[in-house]
Picture 1 (cartoon, one colour):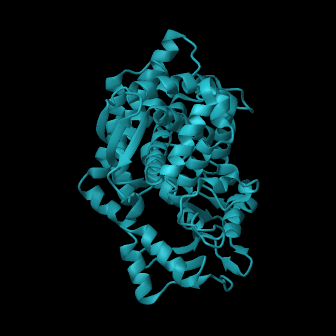
Picture 2: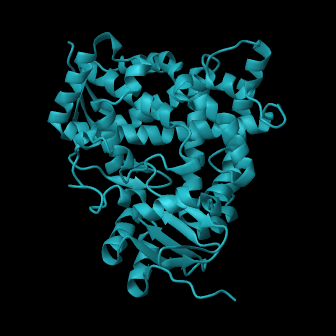
Picture 3: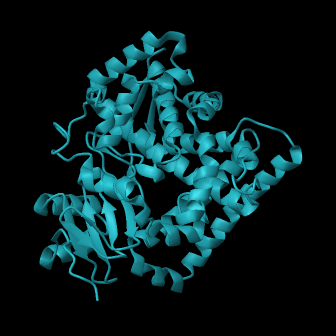
Length: 446
């Protein structure tokens, strides 16, 4: 028998029914409402699955789960099983010793020094994309950034070994796979319906096709015996500490598929939020353009992109207001407790990052766009986790920050974006994304 557990305030009755059904399509609205109603931590028991959930937007609780007692928590079945059947056993979906082994193997390839070598590849793709804008262009920046971010991942992973048609095919397959997997993640009981109609099997087949494309690129690289300073070379050459063996082809392909998905989806979403906030804040845009001008010839160097700057502050503040990784899920491996709360093994913990980032307990004027707040010398201690925290901190953080800083500076050196939207409609799927970002681009150099 379990001892008595002391959960946070429980959501029940009509509020629980509302949360379970409304939360399927509007999770941010529901979770934020529950926190507003009962506090920074709450408990809910899911009627359909009989699972216990604890939701938190409390900084100390978040740090306890992700840092102090991280060994007692693993990614839930949402990612490890549901996404794993499409994406394989890469860093995003793996757990336990297998995950740790892969993390130690791949981590060095994502150091600041290694990422700095990729700037020239990124620049080439960004410059090529920006050439499509004329004196005045109407555009949906959300679509534009998805295409650009995907191309950047393709070229930094594979250099010149992948042609445009292959990139487009991979992009289409990955988008279709994500659409189905998102439904499964959000609606677990919907899986049976998808199974009956053969949707899941078709999706698995698409995933196999994506992996076959990546395998053919891998075979081509090995046959050529060329060495290139891209991520694929790093993945091929890296060796496990204990055996000194390289990764198997199956593991290599799984890791590359996950890098494709994680490396373009969240970055494209974040860029859309960044450009929206700049378009709504003319003073921030003016200050940004002044900084770009003052940096002169050093403006696009890796050292300059990675140092503290107003460009970086803009990116951080936009990701605070609209964090693509809007929630982090963990499952308790053993019974646990924190302060006055306790819960049993198997409890699902949902760390509500979007709520934490706007929690008035930690942020003055939490709903306002104020990039200057990150100039504070104590900013490292802010309640701010857009890339997660602890041992599972996103491995691509440096890559993403440098890529976003480069795109922001390249764009605003030449252009201005005027948004047609004064408010962004957002969808919280596996990641938080805008529905669109339509507007007009003005070329300032013509």
